[in-house]
Length: 105
Image (cartoon, rainbow, N blue to C red; front, side):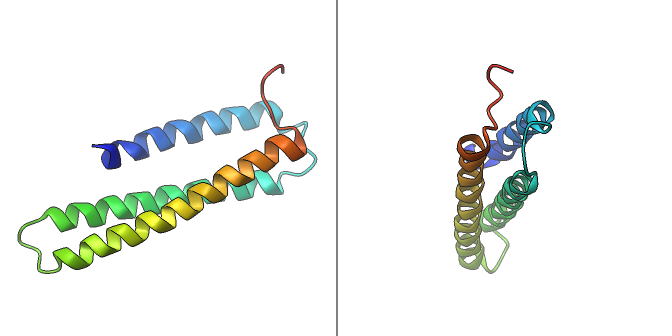
């Protein structure tokens, strides 16, 4: 259930991030880091969706390569985790280095 609901919460988070960007984009000195943060988020979402596909394939009884699908699911989850940490790191840098906080605006 968690793996299947993750993209929905991910999309909600990305929507809220876009809303926050609309509020603060005029106050930022550089939008490059914002776009890097957004790109890392999208990459994490794409790899998460690929992991879901591999997980569903590993559950199908008629498929020959169930073990391979499970390994590919694990690998794509690891890559998705890398991009998720990268997006979080860039988000933190936006807040602490460029003052990209929405509160009080």
